[in-house]
Length: 233
Image 1 (spheres, rainbow, N blue to C red):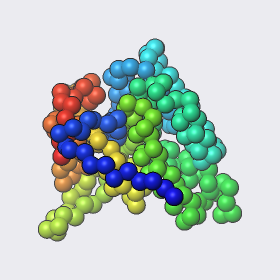
Image 2 (image 1 turned 60 degrees about the vertical axis):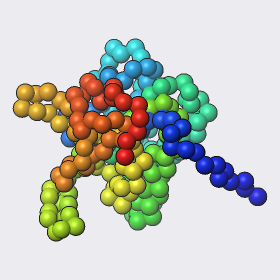
Image 3 (image 1 turned 120 degrees about the horizontal axis):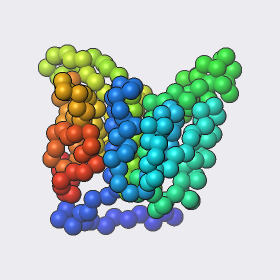
Image 4 (image 1 turned 180 degrees about the vertical axis):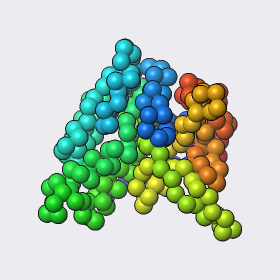
């Protein structure tokens, strides 16, 4: 019989757990380049083959995901990470989860009987696997960073107002679940002066959050250097 833990902890004694970031923006905006601002030993799982922009950085290792048999590769990688990577890297970066979803679906579709087109069941398999990956990676490294492309949808408020909203390109059925597992969701943007930065506070037109510190936004180079270590709601 399973023994459950029903311990109670006072909020004053809570300590910050491992951090999870989801950073998104259009292709070519500079998401992968943001990785160079991480300090400590970093492993990048290159799914979309853009890690060449990190060339020359000695604290970063690259592992190339299998883009063909992605479903089985990801399954085995998660097992490998638990045994061989836990505690070895301060940061693990998945670049990027949008392409990971598509590669998983293509891999599953290739094994099916619909001329390579994923079935409804394949979508469900992918959705559960992605959500579980976000939840599971929290225990592997001090900081996990998921990168994603950007998409837009039409968002309707409870008052009936409609806004075009920017959000990470993740399957909509699991979007809230995935983003709820992250401490930070940041949208990468470029201002009129050409300076890159992240929006960290949600608006009706931008999906974002920041549970690590009080910043509503920051420069690209400062995304991993918050000035507070106490989580805020």
